[in-house]
Length: 476
Ligand SMILES: Nc1ncnc2c1ncn2[C@@H]1O[C@H](COP(=O)(O)OP(=O)(O)OP(=O)(O)O)[C@@H](O)[C@H]1O
Ligand SMILES: [Mg+2]
Image (cartoon, rainbow, N blue to C red; front, side, top):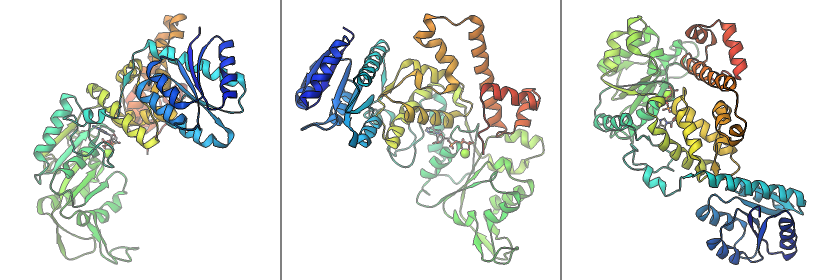
């Protein structure tokens, strides 16, 4: 017997045909024409796959799917539906159905799908699966979360169980209420902006504005008017007066992102406002006083920028009153577990999917990656995996291409026909090269010339390597 399949359809003709076909192919078929009876049976029977009609009197295919999710999350559910309802079948897939077949169906099509479903179930049974149920929200929302907001709230929470993150949560709660300037630093994607916002939310200023300005995104010539505002006629094009970000942030928080990119002449002006909390609009004569909490962030090492003469020393000390360093994800891999769990819940909701867990193999692969783009990269990878996943469980096959070396070594096919040592070394080297190049590209924000310098390659050499590894520049 190849496997046990439970079939439920209110039309006897259909169950008759399906049963005959499955039995001929070597499966055991347990057949129901009443969905309540099918659900009762599912409570006690072990099956390898379920084939269910979508619309039936009483509970329909979606209820069967939901029941299986809760009680047998490893069992694939195949939905049969009429042509007219393909749309609902698609939504069933989003809810985690294994596949669907439209009526009238071709017998070989259905058989193929069932064979795949049964094989998937057998494979899943070999591997224990780590399940993330919705009730895990409580587990996640404990001391490992810095905010009180619920996980589905529009404001994202900061997650982290590592000692480093626990320390950061402590610092945030200690300093949030003070007016002191904070400098958050760390690699790209480590959560600097999230830290800034967490401080604001716990500062007592949370009902006042949180205003952000990205110093790298605004041309040097415009930073001053963006920060301080301008009066009508201050320059060509200033047809009306406009308040700057400092005024907009009055009584709230101003977040100066990528402060390391601020031109030197602006640094002087910033220093003055930090010392006096007052300024004039561009072209204005009135002095404006504001009460603003300043939080800055950078992915540069400002101390070396100071040594190189690119950042004013006095401003650095002024900003660095409370330094918060966010370590890269590869230095706090313990957080990956919790982050994966958290993003699964988030993306299930956002993408209307019903992913219930992932295989330990997949989690291990995620944990052994070096994550040059840090949490942002992990978040993006998971979103893509969840979006593309056809089943209810993320497996190694759902991992993106950059994990291919890892997958090739781990899949059963690969172990049947072991790759040559040369192949393995080549894959490993490529994966290492890919990580190094990605990281350097992140650091130079996609600048190929500087990346090549960093890696000791010629520009042409780097381009060839990137082509070979299928790497693209994906930066702002
Ligand atoms: N500890 C965390 N818990 C949950 N989500 C996080 C955490 N840290 C970062 N993220 C998420 O990762 C993404 C990147 O975070 P954020 O934008 O704060 O990073 P950043 O350090 O400011 O990056 P960049 O230097 O590129 O601006 C965001 O979507 C954020 O919500
Ligand atoms: Mg940022």
